[in-house]
Length: 344
Image (cartoon, rainbow, N blue to C red):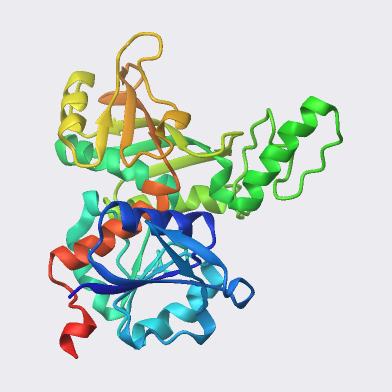
């Protein structure tokens, strides 16, 4: 018998992507339920070749559900995830609500799948921030090979990371430029069309933004607390796909060629690094793809044992929905949960 899966926040960008990926990957589910707020109740949403009717999460009984993929926002997850967990349903949460809880594993399956065994403490597993997910997929095999001391990362993050309203704002502003209409920023602090904004999430007392702090804290939690990380997060006028310029200082010597060979063999990584025009991957090309693409791998002569590289991935997939489904697959494939229908 298969599993019963609920997708909370099914009408959002990531929720829809979760449904698509569950269908694409043939997840062993006998039943998939689409959940959202009461105002979306009754809406129809596609799941593979089927159509699901959205149910209101506040009225839903999770006691016969095995896994809930939660993409309904941090405040909703804070309220609901513990309640769902107490009904014996494992929550895989896409928000930042549980990432920094010491009793909640923060998982990227290619990086630290073994840490998943701690999920039973709260029946919650956290998905990392979209920019962190692709970063650690690229860093983990290099850290294992040569020991990372310090990482300096600048992110170039697409507007889909801010949700459907952010995507609509980029579209509307771009159109307004061409027809000379006035532009009034709403979701963003400044105009996003044909511009870049060095500000994602709220500012903290030290001058960094919360988005930048997430990259630091989550990288340390998943890889190694001794690694020093600093980040500048930038929003760019791209609909889907995050890119990162990454500078790494290692404990031990590692050449660009050695790094290329390591990354070519690493799970989840795809190296496209031809030193010629177009011999690299851009966010546009990563959209709809599962891999974390790595290009422009080169040695940094300004620091001992230094490398630079360019990391690109679809933020709605590896940065969110795909990673959540991969976590669910680890639970199933390792026999860490059994379908409740079998137990009954």
